Image (cartoon, rainbow, N blue to C red; front, side, top):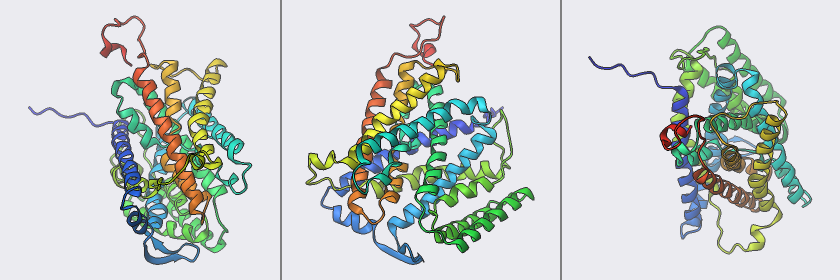
Length: 411
């Protein structure tokens, strides 16, 4: 009699897709750097910024390959981010305040300290203060890709904590983009976007489950948001909040839940196509002829220091204080050194940091390139340091278990 396979865990699918997608993102970023610094560098820049049309917004002008990726495809990325946030708050690891407390504290400190450090280094230089939010973000795909290389040396509790911190971190990044990187508002377009969101909410209340309907409304919402002056990618998160979800506590995701179906459907496209494509289109910086003075200019130095030092100080420091004062419990199955290593990995800001860097310095390609250099330096340092710490850190030992059996003692 053929055996019946157990239903796959949504969390397992999430980890696997994020890990594999993260490794692909790393490859795409390395490839972009190689191409940008080769004989094909000029061709790379020409293709990325080639005008394809049409003109969707007078502010943006004719659409280019870069705009389609950053304003179009990344809206789908933000849609997935929004779905994950909603799922976790309604039916996941953030469904109760007890579970939300530590990730929220860590994420808040992990955004504030890098911003403060950036301002201390670069904020006094004219024109650079608006880049304060660049080192505040964590790239979950990149960080999960690094953890995937470690196998059992990265305890499951750390992976779950990294995911939840990154999800809360994404909420903060979305709020920052909406509040601080929004151009002049077109009231009529914003009203149209609000009306479309209201229609989506109404359909959800009426029990409509057709993803086609919601995706068509999402496309219209994206265009209205683009015209409004609010960055178009915010439409992704807003639309996600209107997608209905069926609660399935302690059970696999519901096959009839629109949110679960859309989330699972988008994961492979985002992980294996959109995010790597974004990385390839945004990580290519021509470093030829770049001197030490340029590498350690206030902008790249402030970003790199914010990501590498600010993240680990903010996240680990807040965790330690929360545990010391009884606000939250220490992560199970992990040593303090392993927790510190994951705090270091949170300094990988790649995708969201590059994205915010482009918003912070519009029309200034030189500053955008400097921001990219800072993001790459800080993220690379965080990735290598966090990986080395977890690779050589003594594993967590379960009390009372024979320590000679490593398979049993590594949590």
